[in-house]
Image (cartoon, rainbow, N blue to C red; front, top):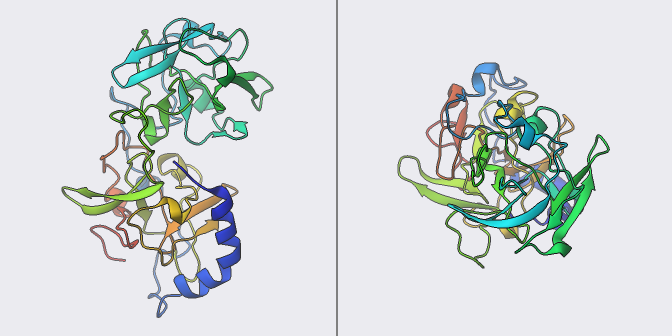
Length: 321
């Protein structure tokens, strides 16, 4: 998504006091809630079955081809393959390479470690070379936390997916709304997006046949709120620890990179658990759901009686405040 971190930071710092006293102040304080100060219980996370479909980002799964997917296995000569989702970058074995939305390209940085790196083995930079259709100048490397060098394409760290066992597999496409195949230019492959089309806004709305108009992120994934969070007098997220594995936070999105979203109360806040900044709509923290496998999914709606999709004005869909 096209997030302007600089703009978001300036807006947050310059207008923090004003936002908290006006946008989040409301006309009158909400009634006291029994949820104040509560944290998410295991039952609030939602159940994500293993099944045969795409799993949640960072969720461990059984590698099907350890020899090919070993983090120490070099990529060799990269090439461009035509898959069902479009043109993708593949390694010398024909395995699709992926990128992670929670990484960064400027500067390159990988945020997939531990169990995440078992499901998404980093592609070593050693011996990687540009084959036909690959611009050599786009290839680079980034030093991971363990000191190893990981291949980058267009600045984005490259990974394989443990469930891809055959050349041409693209089972990692769209997993968790965070993982996408790498296009030859380093951008993510978005199924159905024509060449040269502009990326979708960072946050926008869509008409769901059951829920009505709801907020979605730049990947088309449904955005949710947690009823145990607080918006007044300032935003507080009570989804912490393991909860965030199921409900990833929506990171800051410049308001200029939104469409159809209410501006009042649109602000970011600093989480108290060290997870950085989080976006709000009408001062309420917002999230996506790891159980949503593809754009249009609303599997998080009503989970635990505490998680609900969000309307453009920040209100809950199908639940009272």
